[in-house]
Structures are given as structure tokens and as C-alpha cells.
Amino acid sequence: MRVRVPALPIFLTARDVADMLRVDERTVLRWAQQDASMPATRVGRIVRFEREPLLRWLARKQPRAAHRLAPAADAERPAVT
Image 1 (cartoon, rainbow, N blue to C red):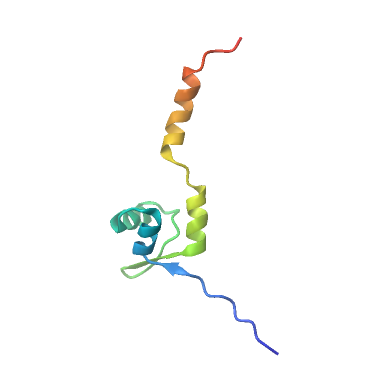
Image 2: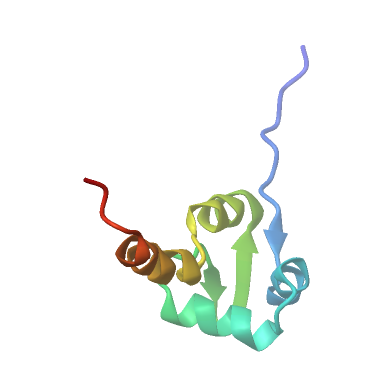
């Protein structure tokens, strides 16, 4: 009988995340510090990001421009009567 061992989660470094998002590593670390919703694990001064929760977190994010432009776009439309 073969015992099935659950797969271990994949953890990414801040550099891995920065490369994936094409931003500076310091930006990723700042996001992790300032945004409590970002799935980051801290052990002392080491910060790691579990891959799957991070991908879900990213999927929930919307560009800020979409939030700013949506009301302005509605205001520019002529009223339909």
C-alpha cells in the first residue's frame, strides 16, 4: 500500500514576485508591509509568499485607473432621453 504524501506549498521570494510582476523587490516588500491582505509569511526578517494564495490575491486586484476612470466616463456621456 502506497501512502500518499500531500504536496508541499511553493513559496516565492520577494525577488521571485518582483520578477513576475516586473517591479522592484523593495516595492514587493513595501506592499507586503502595508497591505495586510497580501499573503505574505514572515519568519523573523525573512518574507516569503505562498504561490497559490498570491496568485488568487493578484487576480482580485483591479487597476486603480479602472476605479478612477469609471465615474468620469459616465459623467462625459450625454443623457439619454
